[in-house]
Image 1: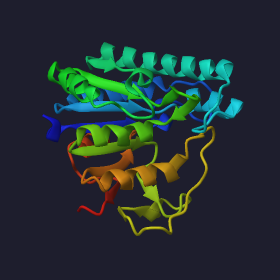
Image 2: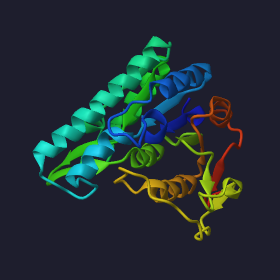
Image 3: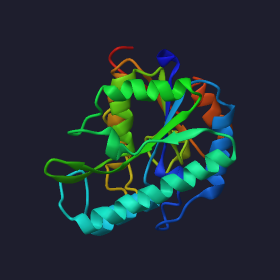
Image 4: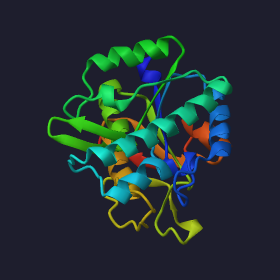
Amino acid sequence: MVNKLTILKLGGSVITKKSKALTFNRNSVEKLSNVIKKFNEPLIIVHGAGSFGHYYAKRYGISSKLTRSTKHVVKIRDSMQSLNHKIVEIFHQNGVNTFSFSPTYMYHNRKIPNIWKNTLQKSISFDLVPMTFGDVLLSNNGFYIHSGDLIVYDLCKLLNPKRVVFASNIDGIYQNLDDNSSLVPIIKNNNNNLKFSKINYDVTGGIKTKITQSLKIANLGIEVQITNGLNSKNLIKALKGEHIGTLFIGDKH
């Protein structure tokens, strides 16, 4: 079962409207649920924060660095719980049996304990789709933000899935984001001349972090690609292993 596992990361730009604070993209999530319903292999979903968690994190200056600002942390947490509930509600209405796990309970000292391997595998064996999300977490010395991209990497180390698909609002990684013809089909560890643009409200590193994490996952021997989650046909192809978007090649390939 595990070697058939796919991890799907739903980017914040796919599930929310990142240009407008606290705005849920219901139409997009409806389409995503229909795509996932057609995918009949073991799946874990991780979703981002979009204009929910990122909005408050930027407003209050909360990042991956430790903070003890309890009042602000609560607002981020509440916004992420709200976003997760909205996604789960639509998925359930459309027949996708997601089972949400808060990362608060999954992490201990910035790691996912090995006991969670059995919990997640057992959930999948019961035909559930485990779901978790980037959030503000508690450590021994304070609170910190742990992004969905980082959670994907942690899950890969724990479960060794067959593939990871990052669903974004663009077709992949571009050499120049102003030039639609500059899509990079393959990125290897030695690609270091790519250009990026900043994304509003993103305090977790944006596309640079995504590339770094994708290469780290690829170095584990796992198939990784970034594709357009707003294109239902491309997304289902990517989930089934077809090269649609940008593919990452690690040292083990």
